[in-house]
Amino acid sequence: MANIKYYLNNIQKDSLKGVEYKNIVIKKNIIIYYTHNGRSTIASLAEELKMSIPSITKLINEMISEGIIIDYGKIETKGGRRPNIYGLAESSIYFVGINVSKRHISFVLTDLTNQIIDIERKVPFELKNTEECLEKLCDHINGYINHLNVDSDKIMGIGVTLPGRVNSTSGYSYYYFNKTEKPLSAILEEKTGFTVLIENETRSSCYAEYILGRKNGVQNLLYFYLSHGLAVGIIIDGKLYYGKSGFAGEFGHSPLFNNGIICQCGKKGCLETEISGQALERAITVKIQEGNTTILAGKYKNNENISLMDIIEAAKKEDVLSIELIEEMATKAGKSIATLINIFNPEQLIIGGMISAAEDYFMLPMISAVNKYSLSLVNKDTEFSLSQLGEDAEVLGVAMLIKKKILGN
Image (cartoon, rainbow, N blue to C red):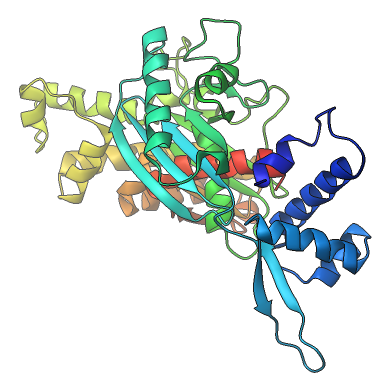
């Protein structure tokens, strides 16, 4: 029995001719229509596709028997005969999102309406730029798909986020798994058997917040992503902004400090050297070495790594040093955000990444600095907010982006 994947994948096959080819094209257009517009009547669908109602009805009945379309019953009208309303079955196709971070992998399975069907967070994983690590990643992906209680034929594609610079159009990762000429997306497609999209974690998070968390029809949005590193996601007129080569948003590598600290990009004085999780971890280590008091001193003495989340949790326990360091970094972040506000004049600016867990310890000094350093005529139009999706933003965003790539919405 045919499914949505069949109609979307077979549209270009040369072996299909005549009526069979025509019907596949029409059914594909029906699927795309319902994906873009939600449920509707056969009359509305026929008008949109410029076809007769009997012809559309015949194809809709076929797609109902295939489990692709559902008759959702009659709709209320002010009088006369009430028409039936039809739409795609939410369980007709699925999308997989995968977020690969330096120490974990997270997985999600979503349906046509972006609802979470299955989610697995923070599976231990050490990300390295090696062939062995790539093989382990593929094993994790295939293992996750195999454990799902859904027909794999209904999985349309896989979206994967990675740290560092990636080009989602070409499928190349420029920081991890870059030792062959073949795009990473092509390698993963060979290893998994699914269409694969490679995306930057910042843009994925930005897209998820825009689609799932936006308010009042916001069309211009900035997403300030601060975790281990720093980057910015950009929505302009309702669309993700990529730039010419797909690398727009590398704000963390703006060389604005004369501190002599070498950034992971190889240059000195980048924003990321003082506004990032790694910068905060380095700062608290120096303070402990200087004899400052903190509840995290024990971890340092035991040769344990002090993470960004450790510092945030310590601040929430009223650890004075942790609070001071977060506020100091937030003030620097606010000054840099003021530049973004002056340039983009966004309707909304969202603080995301792990730093969003710091809540007001970060937000209040950050907003204060923005107000001080940006033009009041500009910043008065910007709403500031914390990420609503937290640690799920990356994985949900890339699941929605692979859906967008395949279905065009």
